Length: 313
Image 1: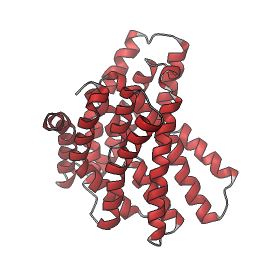
Image 2: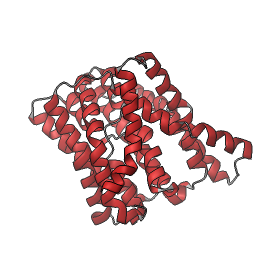
Image 3: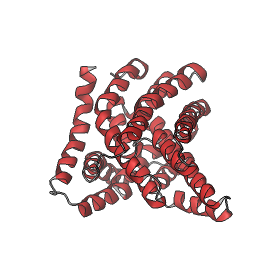
């Protein structure tokens, strides 16, 4: 456990450095916003395209893998939503809490950290988790909130969802990478070197941006935020482990990567959705802060537990 903690510590140390820079105003909120935008559209997209262009979708798209992740995530979604309803919350607030409970920071933290820790073979499973989170659960929260407010779902809502997915650079990068891979064409050396050089900036910049963005958050609504953080960091990977290893018998390495990805803290884009719809933004903000801080220990513990499955640690 200590050895794994020491391997993950540098990643969280960069997050801590970003937090310090944001807290001391050495890095302003405006600078943080621009850094986040830079990472989102350029280095992270280059990294994802590079991974996808060297992979075959037919080889990494394993129906049992996707089924296991969806079953576990929907089970947690239902649990968190049910608890919210028992607390007297409406459907929109309950769904936002459930969305936070299943959506991990796979893009900014999971892809760079897990690929470096577990090896290049982890790229495929991590990207599958990222794609499911962005396509399935980001669409689901939009549909539930819209339906709760309007009492119905319109075709215009589905059109907005489609445009949102097409405008997401991470989705576009993954799809284009798989298309290029499917064509069987090697990347020209100059393009490959460009992507490698640009993608190398993704890890430190993304981690720094996570920390800097946390600096402006205040801890409030601690009880519900603590519950959602526990659901994300502990219950989610536990359910994924049961679904992947017991129910669907997913190949051990892919199962281990999936479990590690499920243990990631709540994604920052959940707050963007909460703020956009005006649904529990403070609660979500506190959950992101708490889950990221606690994940320094919990992510290390989960990676240590899946070590025998991935054969790397």
